[in-house]
Length: 193
Image (tube, rainbow, N blue to C red; front, side, top):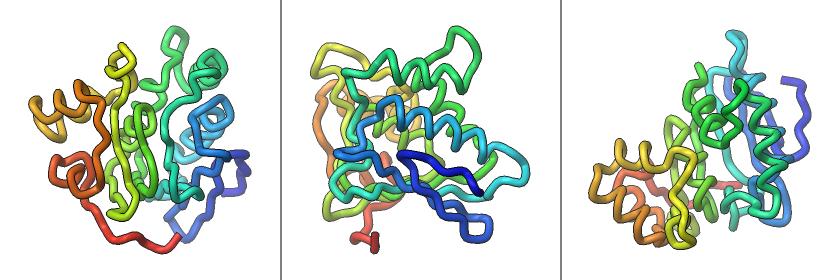
């Protein structure tokens, strides 16, 4: 892979691609992150692409804490470039992520709330740091439903009752509770950055 991205640093080792989010100050999902993610997903969707993609964050405190609410039109316009007309959404972009032929793995350190959690849920596997991983779906707390796949993925992974607990309480969950509920595959002691 020779593509350079502004907010995602990539490193290819054999057939494994490491993709590290690096969008200071806190990795909010804005136009730049969405633009780079659209391009990366296009690049790894080809038959000769890497067989495994591992996502992590350069910031140990923030994986993808949510969308940049001040940039909704901008990131929506970038998301539209990944799909057909009439479906310019992060949900559509994350569906594309979940359908990649490569195995996708997320290594969570820091916060992944709202759309950041929904990005994780679109990956095939999720591993969370016991020291500082935080997951949440805060949308209902501000009067909106999750809009990029959380309800469907959480219900499939945890069952209806626990998914409702996550969505309706807008609470934050640490790595161990997220593992117990099925949100992540496993909580682990922090790995080297």
